[in-house]
Image (cartoon, rainbow, N blue to C red; front, top):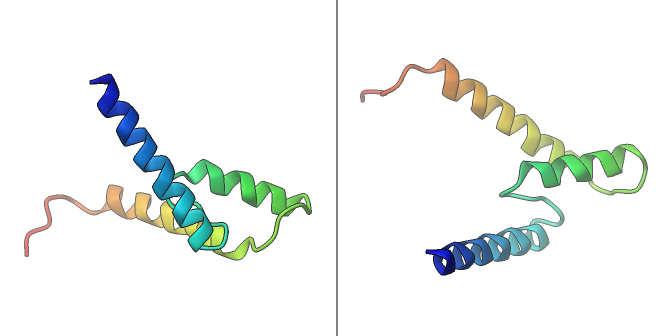
Amino acid sequence: MKSADSVLAAIAGYVDTLSFVALFGLFTAHVTGNFVLIGAEATGFGQGVFMKVVAYVAILVGSWFERSVPFPIRV
């Protein structure tokens, strides 16, 4: 089981790194990475904070929506 955990961690790291490069500095898997970059921008050491703030707001809206909508949704 430990080797499966290592493989999954490696894949997650690869996907996060690839998306960070492809999306010009936006973390897709880890919200804390975006928090760090927003903080760096606030202190004057970062660049391009707009997409990071949009991602943060999207997570907040998604969290609110998930809690406010009664599940299961029937179609």
